[in-house]
Length: 323
Image 1 (tube, one colour):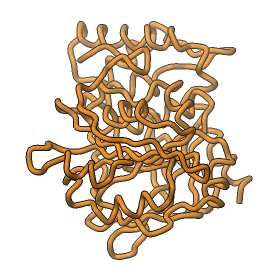
Image 2 (cartoon, one colour):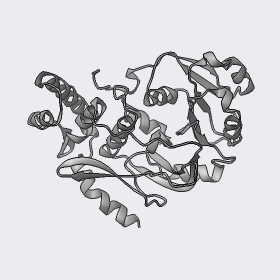
Image 3 (tube, rainbow, N blue to C red):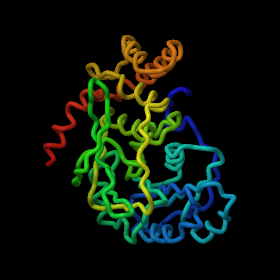
């Protein structure tokens, strides 16, 4: 397994970028859009038109393999949209990371092409309200294709001494959630970069966005739900895969094991025995992985504001005060 990334741009995805005429409209929003597009721009004509009508600062569409259609033709039809075509396999988190360098606004809304984009998704007044909270990430309410609520309220908890992520159907505006489901949310670009973005060495989608999200909380950031706008999926919503695989192992090392002492994060050597009991690899590989994580914690030790135990203990109390 690769070493834990230390800086945001440590891994660059080889890609081709086409189009992207800058929006100079003085009424443009201080929000850009990253559209994770799995099916190709030729199937997203209406989506592009609706996004452009919202006057986002910039729009970046991540394209799949471009052999099935002429990307030049699509880009000529929509010159304001920047099309990013990865030239190698990359996770969703890696693609979002590289697209952050392609936008020119303070906030970035990550969407998927399997979502219905209504006309007037975000208007100027709503945009101002959404970014006024200044939190790291704002998660929109979501419904499936049948109009049923998609779970977006995630809660850190512990069962028999083990960290678990629970979900709750209750939502309200401003309610805190552990993570943005399916990567979808309105991110503060500067804080995203300061947090290091998504860890490209984590290959599982769920553990990739869970890793960034829990790190954000441990480093003093917040993620909140908004009911001011809603997004609907137009096909079945995939159930998050929470399998405790190698991706979980890295998530565990970076977020669950570190302790907060005085004013910084630490990774005492005695925690290696805790890790060894909870991993399935041999002692030498376990020590290698633990040592890499300990180095990462040491580099970022003064970024920590709490550890996961403190986060769990204080979570319920914080949200009760909001109700």
